[in-house]
Image (tube, rainbow, N blue to C red; front, side, top):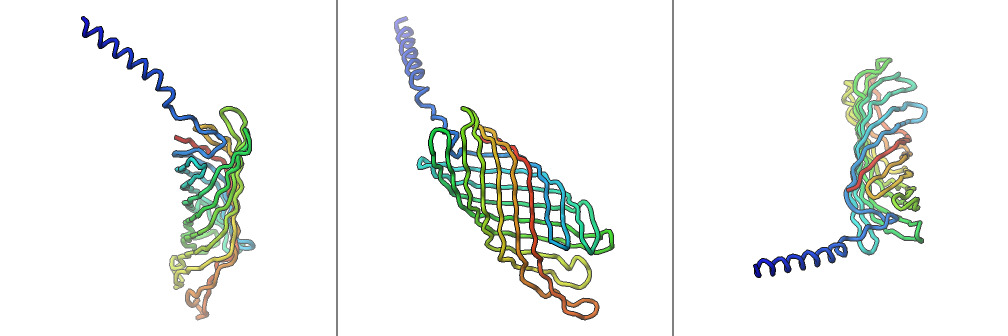
Length: 274
């Protein structure tokens, strides 16, 4: 009985010690005005418009998935890796070659940015960043348009430097409002046009692009685990170089240039952080 009683005293003392220490060992919650660490997954829907002025345009709705992982450090420096996948069935309309529906269109993006949080009081923080991004687009125009014109597959590659800033305003104890503005410095691009798909004897074209720019904006409402809100992406790319692709049926040399174009996409997004 003495042994049992002694063990009961020891266990009681240990439980009391653990109960007193445990709350102190819980990590403090990170200020919501700061960039939050961890994984994020989510979805988005959007409206898409691509246009080559005075020639053609592609328009329609899209659905997508997003994911990210953010590393944060005690110095308030952070690193964020973003991935995006978006798909749509678009409508093609051209001044000279007619129309075509249900054009498969796929966009994938990968980005990494580095930034730092600056707290400007109890209710406002500023988070500038810079990084590197890659955008890939696949567009399947194979088949025939309403006028009998033959289409082909197109592949697009953009490399760019995103430079932006996120502001966070405390709305309540559990929510912040986070607008973001970003400029995308276009480094280089490549357009692959599979003209061999047309059966007209042309070789595939690989045009290089070196002039362009992009912009992004969003207005997110963020809690510790959830974020949602509207966003906008915009690109404007200048004419590419010119590439020889063969001879037409009259024996004339044929050259291809990827014309000046712009892309506008806007939508809404929902993310969960864990």
